[in-house]
Picture 1 (tube, rainbow, N blue to C red):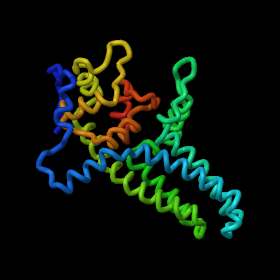
Picture 2: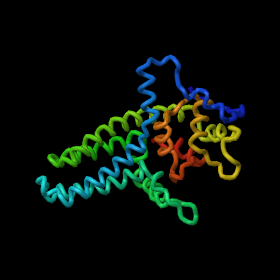
Picture 3: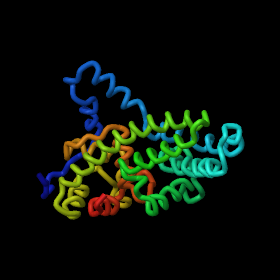
Picture 4: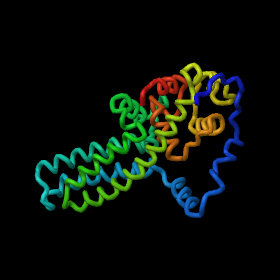
Length: 253
């Protein structure tokens, strides 16, 4: 069912966090699982994965011959370094922020370029399949023990990433179905009091979460919210503009 005609002004305030605890009828096991999911950051795991791939590639290039790796496998280790750098940009760019005199971080600039040339990395479930591909490449490096360790880590990360990606994709689709057109979407954003200031029209992550949960009854968990922002935030500056929301709504992703 599609909603339209947002005539009511919605105020986003501190009381929006009243329902963040989730359903109260959860079992003990469900509560423990939810607690672990809230504490584990997909971005942190991805950052570690990127560092691990770079380390694995360097070790494989210099010491791979000791484990019987031929020239082709050494070439794969070079790709591991490149893939590790990509993972650091996608998952850990916030930890690599060093702003220049204009207030722009180099990692933000390159992640924005990566968004346009390799957008599948920013689709919630798309980057999970990319990491699965990396895992298969690591498995092909058998019997290198460093590659095997990296494989088990990456494969575990893939399972978590695909789960979060699927849930995020589903909720983003529900969010998109709430509006008939971009005009309805823009109207809903404009009529939300305190959402953005009149000049920048930028939506921070916490206010996006409150707006979606209170006005549209779509609640993103911590990692789902991060994945949703990666999908919508085209310039990867940590904020969503009205134009980015409209562009995302009109895109088939």
